[in-house]
Length: 316
Image (cartoon, rainbow, N blue to C red; front, side):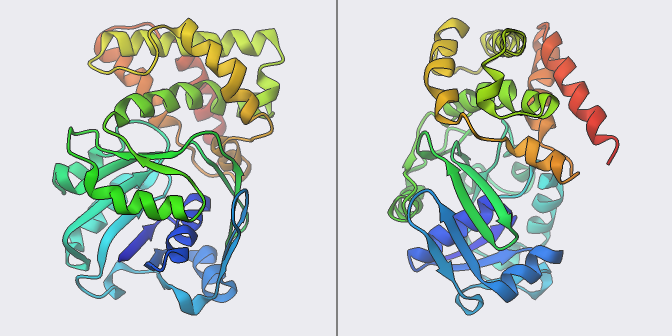
């Protein structure tokens, strides 16, 4: 099995190490200092679960699509930030020769609707999505650290395509130590993650704190409750659905289990802001705002949070 990891951040390196541990042939698309680091220092997966270490001769690193041989890959894992999706999808379309027949693209990102840029160029049977609620960080450019685990990674399709062809990938990720499963209801689980990320990620940036700290203040809790309630109203008015019948039902789980399990975690949005790079806010609260406009739903709190993050980003 030959896999291209497109996006060599914490998630990409962590999943790359997982697949290498299962004897897959793995290549990374990376640029700049990251490409240099994994070429020179090797690759490590640390933190929760089994630790792995690989030398540079155990994988390939490409910095240009033109250098990749034809018919190289059975799978492409999209692990970049969502802001790169338009560029990545176009480049993959322009280099379809590097993909084998029946190659599958799996998108391991935050947000909802991230398959849309890829569906401009690839069929529904070629593009899949993953729900990743595992926390990854990158203490060094060649190291991926698993910091948080609450539920399995889920693989599925937002286009009503049978996800069973991804079973082998799920089994390999699980064998590497991170539980991974196939889901026929990936949309519901992605909206579950949207509820979690939209409530926690931007507010953690604005208040400069971990997920857990946000629940210890009645004012920040009020903001999160408003975000959650607005998202439920959007889901209710749209063609989508999620795992809970009401915001009250979700909030019970959110405050009793989901946040306590990730109490000390700083969000990927927080990490991006610290590095002074663009965040994924457009595919988080930004997606909620777009759908709210379509279905005429008031999402004032989501808009305020979104604008605050965009204001911070505008200084970069």
